[in-house]
Amino acid sequence: MRRRLHETSVELEVPFHDVDMLGVVWHGHYYKYFEHARTHLLASCGLDAGDLIGARYLFVVIESRCRYSAALRYRARIRVDAWVRDIEHRIFVAFEIHDLDGGRRSARGHTVLATTDLAGNLLIETPHEIRARLLA
Image (tube, one colour):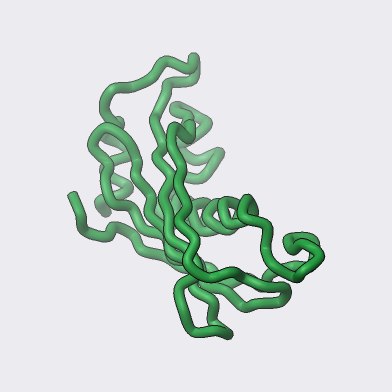
């Protein structure tokens, strides 16, 4: 499945504590920006902590990747786009970060979530209830 399911965006401003002495965002903070968008995306599908997730299932990150193309700087206004690309055996969430001030993409990446039951047992397929919420 290559289509974009439940595409969403969040806008943020790069805070001072995310940059180094040169005013450039430390590379690890891009994952934090991804997390903001992923949380918004999953909540919009009723899959936030405390909904179906946490009550019956857990998500665990099993893979993450970020490819950087342009540095972000202090106080940059950014938009983080997130969408679901695959849901059958894992939840593949793709991201792009755009520098709204510079007018270009700064990074793209993804995280892959596996589903477990509450005891931590890995589920080979994404449960029907989760797939249904992502397809709705």
